[in-house]
Image 1 (cartoon, rainbow, N blue to C red):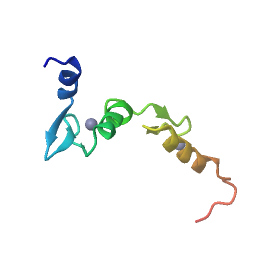
Image 2: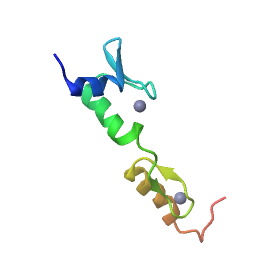
Image 3: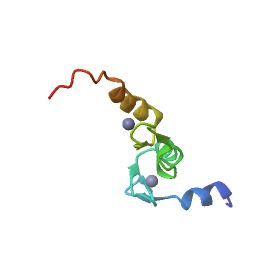
Length: 80
Ligand SMILES: [Zn+2]
Ligand SMILES: [Zn+2]
């Protein structure tokens, strides 16, 4: 009957229409795993990957890598 796990989880989502809704940002997920991934990787984490060239911040490493490729482009043939 008494589950610390459940209480911790309750503090973070509410069930809305059978979906897990994040109490912090109101995003909804069909599956608890997806919700937990959201908490772990997105919601409670400030963007921690920062581009050292333009100081833009990204939540995901892949996004930063993708962004860095823009800087890696040769700048000698400016297309405009
Ligand atoms: Zn959230
Ligand atoms: Zn940048």
